[in-house]
Length: 578
Image (tube, rainbow, N blue to C red; front, side):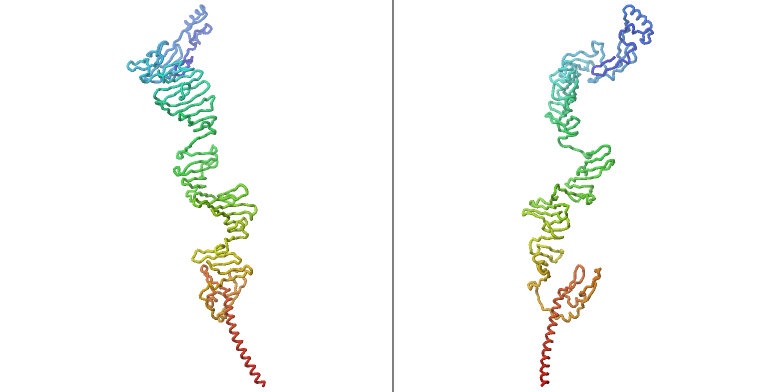
């Protein structure tokens, strides 16, 4: 009940076959009541007569009737339209189904080997002929053309291609027109579309035009191989390969689900590269900003549809952590930090300093290191500022974990330890106010010396602890003797008082600067910044000495007068006693 159409689709005719079938039936198959067989009463009588004669009932022969594309069976049930099943490429703009009586085909002549059937527009008929002069031709069938399969030929020249139907050995098919892109099958060439065989699947395509190779695809066996390999050049450079569930581009055998042997381009104005868990899970998104200028790393938590910026690398070379619209450094981190989670952390492996280096390309190799050494013992923990150049290096400042600071030493012995470079001015501690005033320098020698600029102003004796003011004549000019101060001293008003800031309200003794200033202006100074007057009490020792000197002159003069009076008295007493 199956009708096959060459190059078409099989048609099942069971639906239109009469109930009794079309074969010669035995008498046992003929129903007496004629209902199942569909035979008339006269036919039933004839069948009984035939049965008596030969034992076989010869039923009515039925014919297949083809009207256009519609197929019916004589005495059958309904009809079938074959137009949906036939495969007739319209190579000549002609339509319709070729009909025949089983021996010849109406309108089509037979063709010999290397000939094709060509449509003749002048006679409106098919004609046999070769295809040497060009023109569009139909293929012809040649079951011996290939080693193990049949083929349809499209040319009769040495370069003729074939489009074949593989036999049991699975040779495949090939098409190779002379000057156009072609398809070549397995068995005759190195490129083309490989056919379908019993055990293996070959899928390959390579275009050929004017002897120049075009885009090509070559497949590996599906059954026995690991996948398909696709090539873009005849030298065998792999463009895309698949195998064991992996996909590779530019790789012969991909090692992972996706393996790219070359550059990978993601056009970020059309989409991003997203990694993470599916179904709205935790995900990272790699994208760009500013028309592709800046690379951006975003992430989102599970269940959220919002990606937040975590990192961004600017086209100019800046790197940022966090969503920063206006970056102000080459590396810019913005986030809330805590003691246990700082913005930046350097962690050294082992018990050693963690170091941060600062240098430039014009230093000749010189550099700074900021190095930190944590320790469970605070005194052993250190933060060092280390400098090195071609002349050597060393720790320039050290801060210990217990709060001691060392200048030019890594082992401070006090809250502040300064390791001087020498005993000259400027090798110790200095104070500068940024004005025209000179710097104050404190330098350690055997004495603790105080210099204003380069001039010594005083020192503390290492043996006695006494403060000594500088008084060298070489430091002074316009030297004058201090005039009589006794009268002014007598006008001084020594007082006792309590400083307002003294919460203990302890009484002190001294002078009030405003009372001293009219008498001894040289001993009263004003602090320019605070507008506060102060008294040079050490200077009053000089005033006191000068006053004592004056007083001593008076005492000496009075002693001479007393001596003279005593002499006169003695002389008078002597005269009287006589």
